[in-house]
Amino acid sequence: MNTYAARRAALLAQMRTRGGGVAVIPTAPEVMRNRDADYPYRHDSYFYYLSGFTEPEAVIVLVAGVNGQKEQSILFCREKNLEREIWDGYRYGPEAARETFGFDAAYPVASLDAEMPKLMANAPALFYALGSDSKLDAQVQQWLQAVRMQARAGVTPPTAAHDVRVLLDDMRLVKDASEIGIMKKAAEISAEAHRRAMQICRPGLREYHLEAELLHEFRRNGSQFPAYGSIVATGANACVLHYRASDAEIRDGHLVLIDAGCELDSYASDITRTFPANGKFSAPQQELYELVLASQEAAVAATKPGMRFMDGHDAAVKVLAQGMLDTGLLDRNKVGSLDDVIAKNAYSQFYMHRTGHWLGMDVHDVGDYRDPAAPDGSKPWRTLQPGMVLTIEPGIYVRPDPAVPEKYWNIGIRIEDDALVTESGCELITANAPKTVAEIEAVMKR
Image (cartoon, rainbow, N blue to C red; front, side, top):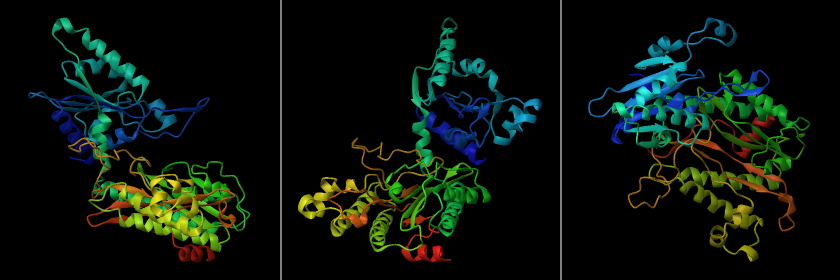
């Protein structure tokens, strides 16, 4: 059984424990950019996780039988069309797709509306992404109505609906060996791209010049896409968390913050590095940089099996808050002690985001951050376990403020790595991207 068939079998098993039924998982639609030009196509992550199939206009249907009923794994996809293949490229067609991707059956996607009422007849429940897509919701209503029309023949429609994403999210949260291998390769490509940007950087370039170097390195090493829109921000722009313009001039004495990662074979990487445009940190820049680095090290130490997801964030905040007091970013006479700063969230003036997020097929990957299965219903933060992958990305962002020492104004710093939870701790799979002050200055000097 191949990896994708095994995942479908695991989902079917979960459906059986909930009484059985029919699951519907469509891929993403093609989206027009303008006139007759489409955006680059990227399949739906849930769909790909269960199929490995990358063509548009495709739907997976799983039938989880109960009481001895037959179970089925079905793919609906485009038919072979030699004329369209001349324009758009190869199509598997149902028969080749069934054999290649290990489905029990495959049909033309044009027959979906005709086949679904048959598959849903007498099924106890329907599993699909509730409310995710108005077109899918309308199709489901159409299929249900077609089943209800058969009531006089003794046919009944599903009487329950479950969000299939809830089942798949927990499956996707813990990565298998194959997924980890791909993610490590993606991390390696992205780390080299950050190294290249540091080596190329010099005052007088513009932010988009560095973005071009990142994209070059991603594609040169086999990445199909950036995992998200790259952030290249210099000077005050680094204090804008999701800065997008990427057109400012890189000036001597400024820092450059790059948040960028590639996608490889449908898996994301996510790295942020901050470095001086001229290759040498100033004293205030180095002071805050080493504070953020120390906070990341504290978060890394708290990222291991048995710890909670938020433990890393709490560890980073403690270091950052103390540093804000020590540097004078926060006035002790106004904000009080370290405990007061944390209790009142006073640190959020300079650090306003969480220290990490899940990472996988999506850069902000699926999975609850709180444990939905806690027996007392308290929903504590989820406990980390081997195979989970998350980012660790503390930062500090200082906007001009009369109450803040001027030497720190417009300094924005974030340091982000991808952490694989292991049996004994965590492995930073993006560690090849230069990170210490000495490493960064050495790379930029060369």
